[in-house]
Image (cartoon, rainbow, N blue to C red; front, side, top):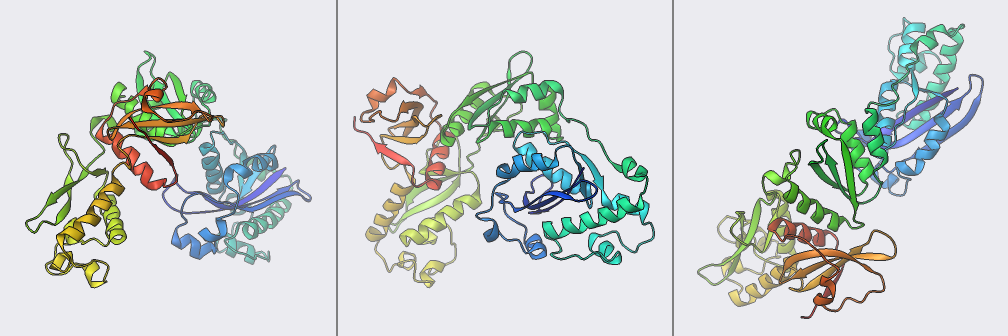
Length: 455
């Protein structure tokens, strides 16, 4: 049995591509016995040159099934089949990559029609699919689309099988792949990791934590550690003796828990504990004309800031957004250094503080609105997010604009007072990095439930 396959992909960096379309024709050597043709939402951007080549764009894939939704069907249609493709190493690698992300080992025998054609049709001008099938009189429609290319490959396979009467060349070119690249002990460890949101810990033989990570799908992420051939990942594979996990339900809780555990254990393979990931801070000063000026500065460990950022580009993007939202002056946000009116004033989006057309009093009122926006909305509050199961919610307690900790409550629990929550809270260390994580998360998740508390 053969499964003739073609995939179209997003393009991009090796190992980071995703499949955008797949076609599989199951063939028993005589007739077509099954088929699968589908677009796939790759959950990652398509490179422009690929979009031009295939005609597949992000809009077309918006409502397409994701790979995990088709994974079972792909396994079924390829089981006990030799996977056939034109340049089979590429299509097979892409399928393995997608299954690796799901924590599943996808192993099939493969047959490449490029290699088979070179053996059986040695004197053609080109072995590229389009030129090869045209030279053999095989019709090819929808070039660079999965169904069209897979159908042409199927017709090519039929010709090649006919030419190889005793099927000896075909047998010699079928490649059997190893059952797994992972050592057996890593496969056993991977089976213990759930495919859920949480924090995972990799331990060495002494029980020491050598790496802490968080993921929306812990099984998939750990599988990536165990499948990678990078130097750091190979060291992790050699040293990992056991794995422990903590399901969190909430991504925000996972982010905070990961930070807390890295600071506690200082795992040798985590870079984060070696230096703060907060690089820039936003400070407030008042200039000689009484205008409040927001300045981006390199963050240091001693000072407090209105908010913090990982990168300068991110900081500038956020401030440009707030400048437009509150009609603020780019010069007073340290984003425009030229003399005279700022570029937003030229577009009539700044009210003229840069050239004295707006009073400091009026301008400073909007600066305070911005500060309210980027600070915690209440000094005492609870952030409510997903729990570990449908019957509970996670809660993160903030007191005096500082992180206290997190916990889980039943959906029927009424949150009214901080003292009532403290018995349920797992304490966490407040830090600039923790507050940065919370504020960044709240900026991205505007609909997250926030409950102000009264002492």
